[in-house]
Length: 331
Length: 277
Ligand SMILES: Nc1ncnc2c1ncn2[C@@H]1O[C@H](COP(=O)(O)OP(=O)(O)OP(=O)(O)O)[C@@H](O)[C@H]1O
Ligand SMILES: Nc1ncnc2c1ncn2[C@@H]1O[C@H](COP(=O)(O)OP(=O)(O)O)[C@@H](O)[C@H]1O
Ligand code: SF4
Ligand SMILES: [Mg+2]
Ligand SMILES: [Mg+2]
Image 1: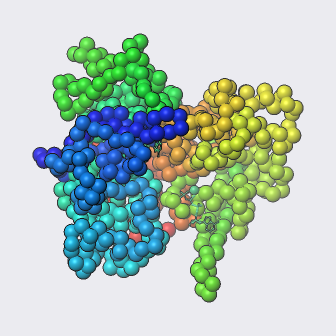
Image 2: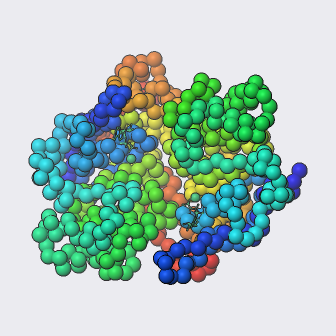
Image 3: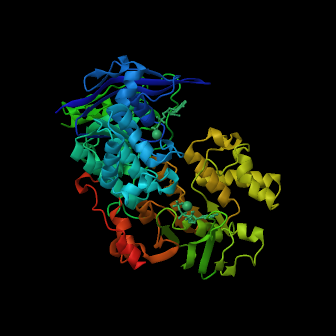
């Protein structure tokens, strides 16, 4: 399968009044053509920083480093600003949680849909409009022709998100990064939008990095999953394996917190993860999850664990020597 | 004991939306003739899509918004017939956003204590003791009392909001999306706390939430709201195992549990419930 994105040891830090905040602490990501990779984790774990770093949309004061950041063979970090803008316009696109952050309230939707493709792909205005109408229709927007003359505020939240999806597909990108695209929507609309993203992705062979904090969403749409905690990936596996056989104490903890209809006894005490996420300012000593982990041993606060293969397979990796070791003992 | 902790009869709230200077305003029936009863000690879940009128209903119950029509009865007495203090001692809110609902310039101790001071209940010593007791009850470490809201995590702030709501010992809590702004690990802590408090204090809850998994876990009865009206209500089993209204069915089929084998649900046609409602 063709690899679209290959990122090694991505780090992002931001200066704050209290010191350097290391939001992303060495992340590896691989995404293949037509694949859906879900990044899941709680708020503040660095999901949005990761996606903005990949898109090249972080503010100047953010420091981004990586051993490799290859997009379809191109080294993104060595591109000039102009080249990077081109890649972003034509081959990578982004869908945000709140569509109004990326829609301009004072331009018509037609203007905004067609702007990129006219600029980057040198197509005529008519062709651009035709494609916009086609994609709006595919995205389930009623009266697509009429929408071209409407302004963002004239649409409901669900419709705006559909427009954003159409917009993200305008230039037939190889990669779409969707950062919590359905978090603000009602569940019935969420289900529709997820189905739409999945269908269009399969139809166009687009790779998608889908970012969410909702494990239910992950389970239903992901091919592969990366679980993030405090700026690191703590577990990565196929969706099947992750939910059937979670290994990292954090992944297990997250799954146990959610009441599941038909499974969790109503009214029963729910498991929770005690404590709070550590501060990301400065260095973390030992395992970042140590202060909340129910499996921690004396060593955990000294050793910084690395991602290791589970059962000898690189398809399922875990950042916890205790989980890996106890498994080996049991076998 | 009152027969009903909370009773709404034919409650409505309409808004006139302006359409520019020369056009007739549109009438929006945000809440449209709702009748509901909650028995003491019962938890009623109120679910429905964004904009269907849940918060408008909650605001009328809390006396933050005047109804256009209909009545709110609290512990069998008309709201408005009792004094503000008496209302505050019966009914308290917990809102979604533990960030904006706490005054950033007051310490946690001041925030929790304020209702006692406002209503001149007890002296300084007994107030301080009450604050400490309530912190114990909601699992808030005493060392945080001198801190400001900005120094607390989201879950801790929601515990502060719950402590503040409970300090006057009300018997009814109106919770409008109390865990929607929280991470799941913290959500579980707050849900456990709400369940424990109910057992310990015999509280009555009106529990408003988008999250049907959470609602199923917490409530005795459910009311499903759509465009200002209740389209279906029943016991937890009635609604979650045997929903009758197409809108309820659509809501339930859209719940995404962490079960990869199930994939995405089929998209239902909303005309089914628009006609039925
Ligand atoms: N002060 C107001 N003036 C005009 N319209 C209002 C006002 N308050 C609420 N509305 C409208 O009334 C309807 C119901 O709003 P409400 O806030 O009760 O919804 P909700 O069910 O709580 O939604 P959510 O799940 O998004 O919190 C919406 O259409 C809203 O826009
Ligand atoms: N503009 C910023 N300046 C400083 N710190 C920031 C900024 N934006 C985010 N952060 C911090 O970076 C970390 C990761 O944030 P983010 O990537 O937004 O998390 P997520 O998307 O997973 O919720 C958090 O600790 C957050 O507080
Ligand atoms: S390394 Fe130790 S503290 Fe970290 S997750 Fe594993 S057991 Fe827990
Ligand atoms: Mg984010
Ligand atoms: Mg509301």
